[in-house]
Image (cartoon, one colour):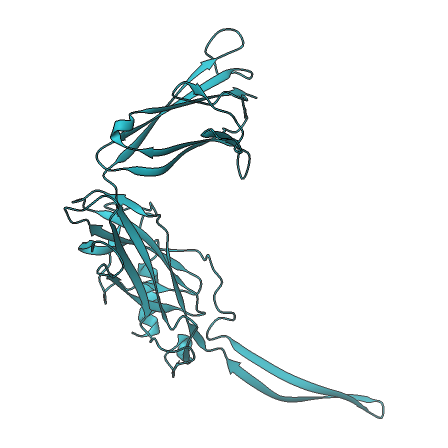
Length: 329
Protein backbone atom coordinates (compact mmCIF):
# COMPACT_ATOMS: atom_id res chain seq x y z
CA UNK A 1 0.00 0.00 0.00
CA UNK A 2 1.45 3.40 -0.93
CA UNK A 3 2.02 6.02 1.75
CA UNK A 4 -0.40 8.40 -0.03
CA UNK A 5 -3.10 5.73 0.24
CA UNK A 6 -2.16 5.25 3.87
CA UNK A 7 -2.71 8.94 4.48
CA UNK A 8 -6.16 8.64 2.93
CA UNK A 9 -6.92 5.64 5.11
CA UNK A 10 -5.82 7.60 8.14
CA UNK A 11 -8.28 10.35 7.25
CA UNK A 12 -11.03 7.79 6.72
CA UNK A 13 -10.39 6.42 10.19
CA UNK A 14 -10.75 9.81 11.88
CA UNK A 15 -12.83 9.29 14.97
CA UNK A 16 -11.64 5.69 15.35
CA UNK A 17 -8.14 6.74 16.29
CA UNK A 18 -7.40 8.62 19.47
CA UNK A 19 -4.63 10.69 20.96
CA UNK A 20 -1.40 9.13 22.26
CA UNK A 21 -1.11 7.22 25.51
CA UNK A 22 2.45 5.90 25.16
CA UNK A 23 5.51 7.50 23.59
CA UNK A 24 6.55 6.59 20.08
CA UNK A 25 10.13 5.78 19.15
CA UNK A 26 11.90 9.16 19.22
CA UNK A 27 12.39 11.39 16.18
CA UNK A 28 9.70 11.05 13.51
CA UNK A 29 10.41 8.94 10.43
CA UNK A 30 11.44 11.09 7.47
CA UNK A 31 12.94 13.83 9.66
CA UNK A 32 16.21 15.09 8.16
CA UNK A 33 19.14 15.60 10.51
CA UNK A 34 21.71 18.04 9.09
CA UNK A 35 25.05 18.88 10.64
CA UNK A 36 27.63 21.40 9.43
CA UNK A 37 30.81 22.27 11.32
CA UNK A 38 32.84 25.47 10.99
CA UNK A 39 36.32 26.72 11.71
CA UNK A 40 36.83 30.33 12.74
CA UNK A 41 40.24 31.96 12.48
CA UNK A 42 41.95 35.29 11.92
CA UNK A 43 44.29 36.27 9.12
CA UNK A 44 45.92 39.53 10.06
CA UNK A 45 43.00 41.82 10.87
CA UNK A 46 40.48 39.68 9.01
CA UNK A 47 38.16 37.11 10.64
CA UNK A 48 37.49 34.10 8.48
CA UNK A 49 34.87 31.34 8.82
CA UNK A 50 35.37 28.10 6.93
CA UNK A 51 32.34 25.78 6.93
CA UNK A 52 32.65 22.04 6.49
CA UNK A 53 30.50 20.01 4.16
CA UNK A 54 27.02 19.17 5.51
CA UNK A 55 26.37 15.63 6.63
CA UNK A 56 22.70 14.62 6.45
CA UNK A 57 20.68 11.67 7.64
CA UNK A 58 16.97 10.93 7.17
CA UNK A 59 15.46 9.19 10.19
CA UNK A 60 14.25 5.70 9.30
CA UNK A 61 10.93 4.29 10.44
CA UNK A 62 10.75 2.00 13.47
CA UNK A 63 7.89 -0.47 13.14
CA UNK A 64 6.41 -1.19 16.58
CA UNK A 65 2.97 -1.88 18.01
CA UNK A 66 1.35 -2.65 21.36
CA UNK A 67 -2.04 -4.32 21.93
CA UNK A 68 -3.58 -3.90 25.39
CA UNK A 69 -6.75 -5.37 26.84
CA UNK A 70 -9.10 -2.70 28.20
CA UNK A 71 -11.82 -5.03 29.55
CA UNK A 72 -11.93 -6.80 32.87
CA UNK A 73 -12.95 -10.46 32.85
CA UNK A 74 -16.44 -10.54 31.31
CA UNK A 75 -19.08 -12.49 33.24
CA UNK A 76 -21.33 -14.39 30.82
CA UNK A 77 -24.16 -16.89 30.78
CA UNK A 78 -24.20 -20.04 28.61
CA UNK A 79 -25.74 -19.24 25.23
CA UNK A 80 -25.21 -15.48 25.53
CA UNK A 81 -24.55 -13.56 22.30
CA UNK A 82 -22.82 -10.27 21.50
CA UNK A 83 -20.28 -10.45 24.32
CA UNK A 84 -17.72 -7.67 23.84
CA UNK A 85 -14.04 -7.50 24.75
CA UNK A 86 -12.34 -4.10 24.35
CA UNK A 87 -8.74 -3.75 23.14
CA UNK A 88 -6.45 -0.86 22.26
CA UNK A 89 -3.99 -1.06 19.34
CA UNK A 90 -1.25 1.57 19.67
CA UNK A 91 1.42 2.45 17.10
CA UNK A 92 4.57 2.83 19.22
CA UNK A 93 6.75 3.31 16.16
CA UNK A 94 7.73 6.70 14.75
CA UNK A 95 5.86 6.79 11.45
CA UNK A 96 2.47 6.28 9.83
CA UNK A 97 1.83 2.54 9.78
CA UNK A 98 -1.04 0.26 8.67
CA UNK A 99 -1.92 -2.84 10.69
CA UNK A 100 -3.83 -6.04 9.92
CA UNK A 101 -6.08 -7.27 12.74
CA UNK A 102 -6.87 -10.95 13.41
CA UNK A 103 -8.62 -12.76 16.24
CA UNK A 104 -8.22 -16.23 17.71
CA UNK A 105 -10.94 -17.62 19.96
CA UNK A 106 -9.73 -21.24 19.84
CA UNK A 107 -6.89 -20.97 22.33
CA UNK A 108 -5.65 -23.60 24.74
CA UNK A 109 -5.69 -23.24 28.51
CA UNK A 110 -9.42 -22.57 28.92
CA UNK A 111 -12.61 -24.62 29.29
CA UNK A 112 -14.49 -23.48 26.18
CA UNK A 113 -13.95 -21.70 22.88
CA UNK A 114 -15.96 -18.49 22.38
CA UNK A 115 -17.66 -18.35 18.98
CA UNK A 116 -16.74 -15.24 16.92
CA UNK A 117 -19.71 -13.22 15.72
CA UNK A 118 -20.14 -12.18 12.07
CA UNK A 119 -18.55 -9.70 11.86
CA UNK A 120 -16.43 -10.26 14.95
CA UNK A 121 -14.27 -7.11 14.99
CA UNK A 122 -15.42 -3.48 15.12
CA UNK A 123 -13.84 -0.09 15.61
CA UNK A 124 -15.31 1.75 18.60
CA UNK A 125 -16.32 4.67 16.39
CA UNK A 126 -18.41 6.45 19.02
CA UNK A 127 -15.89 5.83 21.85
CA UNK A 128 -18.63 4.28 23.99
CA UNK A 129 -16.58 1.28 25.12
CA UNK A 130 -19.29 -1.12 23.96
CA UNK A 131 -20.85 -2.28 20.70
CA UNK A 132 -23.43 0.14 19.28
CA UNK A 133 -24.98 0.64 15.82
CA UNK A 134 -22.57 3.55 15.28
CA UNK A 135 -19.50 1.31 15.42
CA UNK A 136 -17.69 0.41 12.19
CA UNK A 137 -17.17 -3.25 11.25
CA UNK A 138 -13.58 -4.13 10.40
CA UNK A 139 -12.92 -5.71 7.01
CA UNK A 140 -9.32 -6.95 6.51
CA UNK A 141 -7.75 -5.35 3.46
CA UNK A 142 -10.46 -2.70 3.26
CA UNK A 143 -10.23 -0.56 6.38
CA UNK A 144 -7.07 -1.74 8.09
CA UNK A 145 -6.25 0.90 10.71
CA UNK A 146 -3.49 3.23 9.59
CA UNK A 147 -2.05 4.82 12.71
CA UNK A 148 0.24 7.80 13.06
CA UNK A 149 3.05 7.57 15.60
CA UNK A 150 1.57 7.39 19.12
CA UNK A 151 -2.03 7.09 17.87
CA UNK A 152 -4.29 4.23 18.90
CA UNK A 153 -7.49 2.59 17.72
CA UNK A 154 -10.03 1.11 20.14
CA UNK A 155 -11.13 -2.26 18.85
CA UNK A 156 -14.14 -4.36 19.92
CA UNK A 157 -14.04 -8.16 19.63
CA UNK A 158 -17.47 -9.79 19.71
CA UNK A 159 -18.10 -13.44 20.59
CA UNK A 160 -21.04 -15.69 21.46
CA UNK A 161 -20.90 -18.16 24.33
CA UNK A 162 -21.71 -21.82 23.64
CA UNK A 163 -24.05 -23.88 25.83
CA UNK A 164 -24.23 -25.82 28.05
CA UNK A 165 -21.33 -24.75 30.27
CA UNK A 166 -20.54 -25.16 33.94
CA UNK A 167 -20.33 -22.24 36.33
CA UNK A 168 -16.71 -21.05 36.53
CA UNK A 169 -15.72 -22.18 33.02
CA UNK A 170 -13.36 -19.78 31.22
CA UNK A 171 -13.09 -18.90 27.53
CA UNK A 172 -10.23 -16.92 25.98
CA UNK A 173 -10.20 -14.67 22.91
CA UNK A 174 -7.09 -13.02 21.43
CA UNK A 175 -6.64 -9.95 19.24
CA UNK A 176 -3.45 -9.60 17.21
CA UNK A 177 -2.21 -6.57 15.26
CA UNK A 178 0.55 -7.00 12.67
CA UNK A 179 2.30 -4.33 10.60
CA UNK A 180 1.45 -4.47 6.92
CA UNK A 181 4.93 -3.19 6.10
CA UNK A 182 6.32 -6.35 7.60
CA UNK A 183 7.13 -8.29 10.75
CA UNK A 184 10.18 -10.20 11.90
CA UNK A 185 13.03 -10.23 14.34
CA UNK A 186 13.95 -6.84 15.82
CA UNK A 187 16.31 -5.08 13.44
CA UNK A 188 14.83 -6.62 10.28
CA UNK A 189 14.98 -4.02 7.50
CA UNK A 190 12.41 -3.41 4.76
CA UNK A 191 14.39 -1.16 2.42
CA UNK A 192 12.55 1.90 1.15
CA UNK A 193 9.19 0.80 2.57
CA UNK A 194 8.99 3.20 5.51
CA UNK A 195 7.47 6.64 5.88
CA UNK A 196 8.66 9.15 3.22
CA UNK A 197 10.50 6.35 1.40
CA UNK A 198 12.84 5.66 4.31
CA UNK A 199 13.86 2.19 5.34
CA UNK A 200 11.48 0.49 7.76
CA UNK A 201 13.23 -1.21 10.68
CA UNK A 202 11.34 -3.71 12.84
CA UNK A 203 11.36 -2.68 16.49
CA UNK A 204 11.30 -4.65 19.72
CA UNK A 205 7.72 -5.87 19.26
CA UNK A 206 8.65 -7.67 16.05
CA UNK A 207 6.08 -5.52 14.27
CA UNK A 208 3.19 -7.47 15.78
CA UNK A 209 1.59 -7.82 19.19
CA UNK A 210 -1.43 -9.41 20.82
CA UNK A 211 -3.50 -9.46 23.99
CA UNK A 212 -5.98 -11.98 25.37
CA UNK A 213 -9.33 -11.31 27.02
CA UNK A 214 -11.33 -13.70 29.16
CA UNK A 215 -14.98 -14.68 29.56
CA UNK A 216 -16.11 -16.31 32.80
CA UNK A 217 -19.33 -18.30 33.01
CA UNK A 218 -21.29 -17.02 35.99
CA UNK A 219 -24.93 -18.02 36.01
CA UNK A 220 -25.37 -16.19 39.30
CA UNK A 221 -26.09 -12.50 38.80
CA UNK A 222 -25.74 -9.86 41.52
CA UNK A 223 -27.98 -6.81 41.29
CA UNK A 224 -27.43 -3.75 43.50
CA UNK A 225 -30.26 -1.28 44.10
CA UNK A 226 -29.47 1.92 45.99
CA UNK A 227 -31.81 4.34 47.74
CA UNK A 228 -31.41 7.21 50.19
CA UNK A 229 -33.41 9.09 52.79
CA UNK A 230 -32.64 12.59 54.10
CA UNK A 231 -33.27 14.10 57.53
CA UNK A 232 -32.45 17.82 57.75
CA UNK A 233 -31.68 19.75 60.98
CA UNK A 234 -35.23 21.14 61.00
CA UNK A 235 -37.00 17.80 60.91
CA UNK A 236 -37.64 17.93 57.18
CA UNK A 237 -36.20 16.04 54.24
CA UNK A 238 -34.23 18.77 52.46
CA UNK A 239 -30.59 18.08 51.47
CA UNK A 240 -29.17 21.19 53.18
CA UNK A 241 -25.82 21.51 54.97
CA UNK A 242 -26.00 19.56 58.20
CA UNK A 243 -28.63 17.14 56.87
CA UNK A 244 -28.08 13.43 57.47
CA UNK A 245 -28.37 11.04 54.52
CA UNK A 246 -28.96 7.34 55.10
CA UNK A 247 -27.92 5.27 52.10
CA UNK A 248 -29.31 1.78 51.62
CA UNK A 249 -28.00 -0.69 49.05
CA UNK A 250 -29.67 -4.06 48.55
CA UNK A 251 -27.52 -6.69 46.82
CA UNK A 252 -29.65 -9.55 45.48
CA UNK A 253 -28.23 -12.78 44.03
CA UNK A 254 -30.33 -14.52 41.39
CA UNK A 255 -29.78 -17.59 39.23
CA UNK A 256 -27.74 -20.73 39.70
CA UNK A 257 -24.08 -20.97 40.65
CA UNK A 258 -21.96 -19.41 43.34
CA UNK A 259 -20.28 -16.02 43.60
CA UNK A 260 -17.21 -16.08 45.81
CA UNK A 261 -15.17 -13.34 47.47
CA UNK A 262 -17.99 -10.81 47.01
CA UNK A 263 -17.03 -7.36 48.26
CA UNK A 264 -19.34 -4.34 48.43
CA UNK A 265 -17.80 -0.87 48.37
CA UNK A 266 -19.31 2.60 48.14
CA UNK A 267 -17.29 5.85 48.03
CA UNK A 268 -18.20 8.56 50.50
CA UNK A 269 -19.64 11.37 48.33
CA UNK A 270 -17.73 14.63 47.93
CA UNK A 271 -18.72 17.37 50.40
CA UNK A 272 -20.13 14.85 52.85
CA UNK A 273 -18.73 13.29 56.04
CA UNK A 274 -19.20 9.66 57.04
CA UNK A 275 -21.03 9.15 60.34
CA UNK A 276 -18.79 6.90 62.44
CA UNK A 277 -20.18 3.46 63.37
CA UNK A 278 -23.22 3.88 61.09
CA UNK A 279 -22.35 0.93 58.83
CA UNK A 280 -24.75 -2.04 59.01
CA UNK A 281 -25.28 -5.34 57.22
CA UNK A 282 -28.79 -6.79 57.33
CA UNK A 283 -29.47 -4.60 60.38
CA UNK A 284 -26.40 -5.75 62.33
CA UNK A 285 -23.86 -3.08 63.27
CA UNK A 286 -20.39 -3.32 61.74
CA UNK A 287 -17.26 -1.60 62.96
CA UNK A 288 -15.23 0.84 60.89
CA UNK A 289 -11.95 -0.93 61.67
CA UNK A 290 -10.51 -3.06 58.86
CA UNK A 291 -8.27 -4.91 61.32
CA UNK A 292 -11.01 -6.59 63.33
CA UNK A 293 -12.97 -9.73 62.56
CA UNK A 294 -16.27 -8.39 61.25
CA UNK A 295 -17.09 -7.81 57.57
CA UNK A 296 -17.22 -4.01 57.58
CA UNK A 297 -14.66 -1.23 57.41
CA UNK A 298 -14.15 2.40 56.49
CA UNK A 299 -11.48 2.67 53.81
CA UNK A 300 -9.46 5.89 53.90
CA UNK A 301 -7.15 5.46 50.87
CA UNK A 302 -6.97 5.93 47.97
CA UNK A 303 -10.48 7.33 48.52
CA UNK A 304 -12.80 7.25 51.52
CA UNK A 305 -15.33 4.44 51.12
CA UNK A 306 -17.32 1.96 53.15
CA UNK A 307 -16.49 -1.67 52.46
CA UNK A 308 -18.35 -4.87 53.37
CA UNK A 309 -17.04 -8.35 52.65
CA UNK A 310 -20.12 -10.37 51.72
CA UNK A 311 -18.17 -13.59 51.18
CA UNK A 312 -19.82 -16.39 49.21
CA UNK A 313 -23.32 -15.80 47.84
CA UNK A 314 -25.88 -18.03 46.18
CA UNK A 315 -29.49 -17.36 45.39
CA UNK A 316 -30.31 -19.06 48.70
CA UNK A 317 -28.35 -16.34 50.52
CA UNK A 318 -31.14 -13.90 49.75
CA UNK A 319 -30.87 -10.09 49.58
CA UNK A 320 -27.99 -8.48 51.48
CA UNK A 321 -28.85 -5.01 52.81
CA UNK A 322 -26.09 -2.52 53.57
CA UNK A 323 -26.80 0.87 55.16
CA UNK A 324 -24.58 3.75 56.27
CA UNK A 325 -24.98 7.45 57.05
CA UNK A 326 -23.24 10.64 55.96
CA UNK A 327 -23.84 14.28 56.77
CA UNK A 328 -23.74 17.08 54.22
CA UNK A 329 -20.85 19.44 54.94
